[in-house]
Amino acid sequence: MHWCGDSEYTFFELKVDQGAGTPIAAAIQITCYGALNVFTRLHIQDMTPKVRQSPMLSAGTVHLRVLAPRCYYHADHIDLSWFEDRLDRGIQDWLGTLRTPGQPALEPCLPKMDFSFLMFPDTFDVNMADPKDIKWAMENRRSVYQSARSH
Image (cartoon, rainbow, N blue to C red):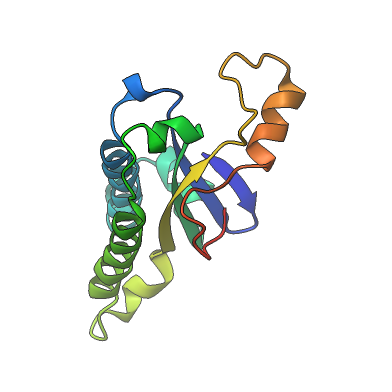
C-alpha cells in the first residue's frame, strides 16, 4: 500500500517473476483487497476502534495496481488490455450499484476506485538492494497497456 496524498492510496499486488502466478490471478487478488476495503467501510460500525481510525478507510480514492517486471506480463505474449479495461469498468459499475439514490448516507464512505496493470522500468532488477534504486524503480513504473489512467 502506498499513501499518495491527502485522500488517496494505491494498493499494489507485487509480482517479481512468472513463478508468482498469472497477471489475471494477481488482478483478482488486488480486486479482493479493494472489495475488503469497501466492505470494511460499509460495516465500519462493527469494526474495532483501531480499524475505524485507519486513514485508508477514509481515502476518497483507492487505486488497485498489479506491479511487476515487463516479463511477467509478456511471458505468454497475451494482450490483457481488454481484461484491464473490463475489470476497471466492472469496479466502477459495482461501486455505482452501492451508490443508490435511496441510500445517500453511503456516498461519503465509498471511495473512487480504479484498476490497472503496471510494470517496473526495463532496467529493474529483483535483487536491487539500495533503497535509492528501489525508490527510482517505484517512481518510474508505467502502464503495461498505455492506458490513460494514473500510476
